[in-house]
Length: 282
Length: 282
Image (cartoon, rainbow over all chains, first blue to last red; front, top):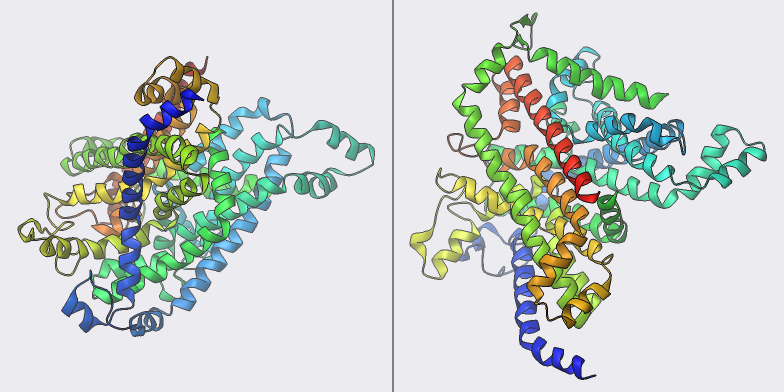
């Protein structure tokens, strides 16, 4: 009892200082988001009169609408969604079958294969990009969304195979034996037993593959040159690089780039924190 | 097995081809001409390459070293002070605020900061003018003196949330009795942080340092959007330098040599980290 009160008395001013510091730092972290939101709905004349720090005089949505129409943002969102969605589903399918084929429980003997998959994921894409670019041109897949889907399915499933191999190595043997005794084939065991039981891990992978692929820039930039095929990051990155945007357009474009990411964050917050934490100790 | 075929065609073969290209002189059309180690010899005497390597070290400081230290302090403060004495909800809210920049595509973060740091209409210079420090205004990303530091600041903003999330998850593993007995022995908060927290979450610290260092070595998107390596190469990095050689200078052999070297550094670093970690555990 007395120890608690002593700690209280000593802790209070410190607690206040630490708490204030943390809150201040969090506010500083969030200020760029607030600035973007405030200025994306400001008219250009308002901006040039009052600068980026004041609140908008009135709600002005023309900037966002104009930017949306000018870059056909709906099309960019669609491209990103199609590519990221296809990659997430395909990469999870490839990862689980590869990890399963590598052998449940026999993973330790194949450590070097798993090491190769890990390295494949760590490797810089610069070391693959030129041969991939050349190959895509040769087989007429250059400047197609399919090329990007194939490439990222391979890249993400390298990581997925690495991760799932270690997860499946702890899969209870008795369940597999029971399935075999009941006459299930290897594929039936995979689809009816392993996939449903590993679903928590697979769903985390699905979300991560989607978001990682959505955020990718380097290879989509190289592969998708025509406007009609570009993803959200490529379109925004290329426009920013051209230095053609004025202040309010730039904040409108930033807002349109932020919104999908924040929506994913809110939708998947639990999955993300769980997955990031699990990935760290693997 | 589709996984193996995909892995071969998209990762293993392009990687090998890239290494081969690095021993040739090739402009992307016609036949590559074998030149042995010439590209590597050129690389080691190329001041642009060395400058880009030095810049990359600065990015490692900004993306790995500062976020790890700062993240450790903030995670411990959130865990100790906020979660235990204010409430889990406040701790989670603060953690989410610090993590928010992490969910953005790097390109979008670049668009946001390109606008905030703009010399004429950016919020940072405007703020300085408002508080009477007009003489401190800078062309943050466009001046050789400030460009690298500005990029580093943006990278800290982007990266900080990742170690905080990982470390806070790691702290939940630590046995509270360790802290209690240390407190009884009269250990200060700092002593507990360095003598208990750091050794206990060593695996997390290793993972964060390794993954952030690798991410720093692969930095392309942020540089592309913020500075395009400029001004005058002040923020160029090997990753962007290889891209320039591949796609802007048609110097494919040279670009391949840079990419190969970068891959070797990343693979080597991963091995060293894993060895050190293993030794620490045994």
